[in-house]
Image (cartoon, rainbow, N blue to C red; front, side, top):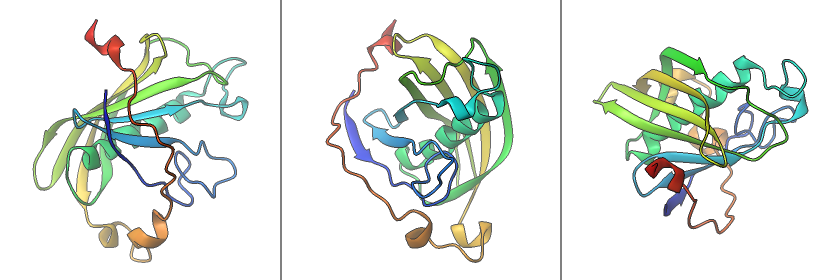
Length: 169
């Protein structure tokens, strides 16, 4: 599927913050179908039991995907999570390449609902989430934040297409 745009990374977010030493530093892409996709891997510091990622960190990634789907969908602003429901289908491994995807399922001027999924490269669904967000200006969420200081990084990587053919099965 065609990548429409690479999304920006923040400074300190646990999921996408490039200055966060403990974070995932995940990269995100807006796709032609208005979804958001990430190609990433968890690491051994994200484990619960050996070989498995902690459920809270899985949930954080799903939450980030659902929120970032807002931008791929063509909406402005930021959101705060109001509701989040997660299904853990299979153990999520660390140190293995994964694909994650967030899709808007409902939107109006104040609210956004999204679904998000984490997959193995063969398309096996490992976990999924349903989220509801309140859309707000960044200045309402944090009086000390600005988009220019919070999301300063755009790392071009020439990824123009991401294989999501498993979604057609």
